[in-house]
Length: 344
Image (cartoon, rainbow, N blue to C red; front, side, top):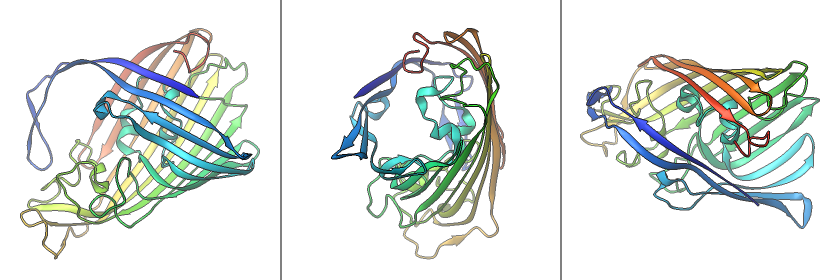
């Protein structure tokens, strides 16, 4: 049984009163000054009947979910060997290392801009993971979709297509450890390399006014939802497309110093839509050879001024390609009360 909470203050001072998205819509920009619980979690894990029949359930009580308690992750798995654990349930689509590593070990209060833009989300499905060779690991998954978090398996919310995703990583030198910060204070260099791939076909119109249907998750690099009426072509609502995401990552630790980087490549093609004035129009609108291509990276570095206790961090994140660019620069500090990510 475990729990955690991320309590934070958000202050944002606007420089302009509105912005115009790719569809030509004028969107107001508001300032912010508020406290929030971004990650409130309570979890249970253990085994049933047999030590190799295991379970995990994670409850979430974020304030941005209207203070409603929801089940974020849950699964049952059978442990066959170090090389094979088979799971069924709801979890991360493994399309990005920074995403798959979880929010407990992030350097900052959240992941990079690039990770947030490119990554998949959670879905229900079946997956397997393990150590297939010494210090070489994998995770493969077939699930309901690229992002079906909070959606129901009914028409208009998720389609009939699966997502296919896999990742592999390798502790090249030394035992890298948990998280990107060098909490272990490695006296010998430790490095990790990995790569991830995800493919999903998205189709089915659904109610475009509902932002949480499966197709509405994807955004253009300027922040416009791909399914916004007129986002790509005046008078057209996109409701079908294929998405492919490839990512490669590398990380390094040595004597309190640490560095990590993940580069992303995303392609959206086979795009089709319907008349926005008549969404029930049975004749789809082909966008011809339209292909949306974006790439970018998140890069972070940190150093412990006091080993295992006080760390300074820096990062930059960049998004390039169609409808871009997007950029982020950040700095921050971490204080580790007991030398672990559980109390910082």
